[in-house]
Amino acid sequence: MPKIVRWNDDLLLEKARGVSLAYVDKLSDEFRSQFSQKNYQWGGVTRRRNGEVVGTSRDLVDTGVLRESQRVSPEAGGARISWNPPGGYAARRFRGEGYGERGRPADWVSPVIDRNPFAPYFLREWSRFSVGTSGPATY
Image 1 (cartoon, one colour):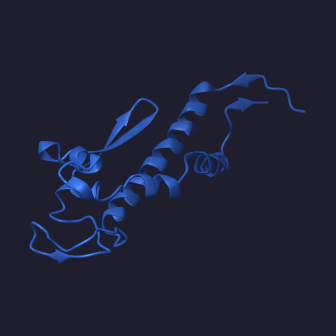
Image 2: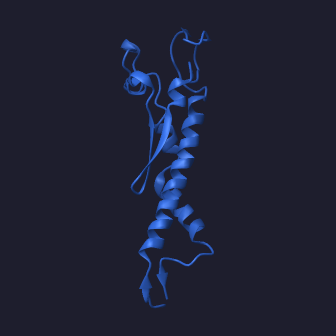
Image 3: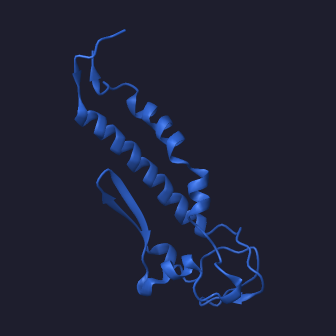
């Protein structure tokens, strides 16, 4: 078994951050795509603000303001994905406010997270980031 003679914390943290940021990029793209998927069930017919008349199954895009408000903000150790259109619209829609008995129309976050669990992604990408480079330990 090789003997570790020096540990490179900076390289280890750089690789971990690289994998985390790659995960955030993947989720960001999938969240944008999720808005356009016509797989949301909603009883009845609705005339959207953009004039489109929709029934079920439908996508989540009306004016596009909510989808286009998506932001990726760097933070320590990774990044945050958020939606913040004017007037707190995203939070109200996600909580289902204003829909009465019909409840929340759609959860665009959980399907993306469920399809992309972090641990398997991290392990796969960690291996990819590690190929052909010196690791965090020197033997």
